[in-house]
Image (cartoon, rainbow over all chains, first blue to last red; front, side):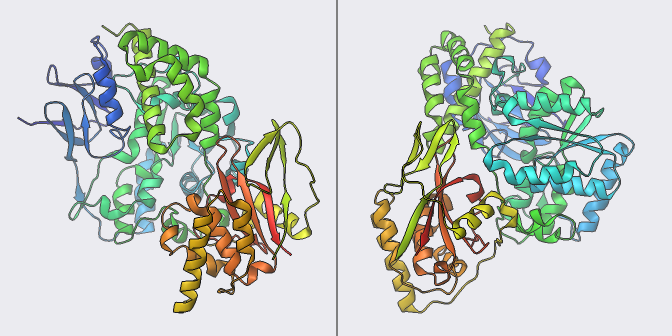
Length: 389
Length: 188
């Protein structure tokens, strides 16, 4: 028998198949849970995709995360994407002007409040910054920057925009490692890759507050909205209207890191009807990983650094150095998890050894390693807060 | 024929450089031996590497229609470079130094190479062969082209690319900026 599970809220909810109930994260976490090695195997089999892409995934501790505004079908030990709750026909006449009007109408409520925008030095966040500056919004900027050689192009763009606003905070990648403070990861109902970078978001939330703002806009959805082949999203004549996959990684951070501090973390490219309009405008085009379409239609609105070039800085070095700098924490996460599960893949010595060889792993093993680390981080947080049976 | 390979060592946590003979990335407490001062075209190309927004680059290819003979020549040279592989570093460079001009510009060369069967998918996987083939088959490369081989010092991943008279001619390569140039190869 198939059960259909729906989440009409704007938050990630959690379906507990043992009791057949959909719960908020706080309700879900009220019950202590017994976790087994099979749950780790199931999580690794999901390949970190369950909050990022429609598909069929295995349950973890008889439960799964239900993305906002989606419908899923549940069978014995797997769950499968069914549909969006609010698919709508593709807008026929979406243009840059209709996009601007929609964004303005959504952001009207913030017109008198300071808005912080994450200035990454890339195209997506720059689109948001330019748009808000051109409509006289009161914006501040915050952004992680680095002295690393590979970040020199991003630094130039950050310097360009930081000089255009009254208030900005430049945060340092060097003082915030990619895997810092894993032992202080927020308590969360199910393992999530996003828990590994909670410190970066914690620091960004504090910067937002320091700028007297309670809203941080990011450009996170840009890779998908401006790069993905529209045919992969459009279902028949409809385009999903909800808060869907490309926003979910950051939705997790919004829910578990930012909201605790009273800050909202929102992808400005994915608000309201913007995703539908953008996908509709790109209909018929192919995959565009350099985002040439966006660079062309915005060539009169953005600096040449962003319209003439499509450079892409890697964060790999920051990730790899970050991993090696927290080996003691990784050993402790592994020790706690191994004592509880007895699963060989999570043995502290093996986790530490794999951290050191991560840089030379093929990508599938890298994904598996990050899954093991996310699982250990989850178990550690549950043990720390006495939530394990 | 080739002129010279200039070592461009970087001093961070020790000395990082690339062997001119094997193409291996080396990390040492000592600087590499025999560092000659690079010629003006290498110094100028390095400035473009360090400030990529000064560099001319376009994602659009510049396609030249090839005759059957030209296509056969290009494919044969490509196959030879792949057979030699990354492990025959010096031999590959020497082979690429034997000019077989097919294209007027290096940008045209990259545009055609991008369509060869060996060069589908990720640019970074075949960058050495791709770059050498472009240099071998382009007329303009001899007039100011510089092959750079660089590395990301955290992952130790390496990459090869060309800067030629202020231009990065590979329309598909947007990742070259992530690699610190450690070796420059120029024509005589």
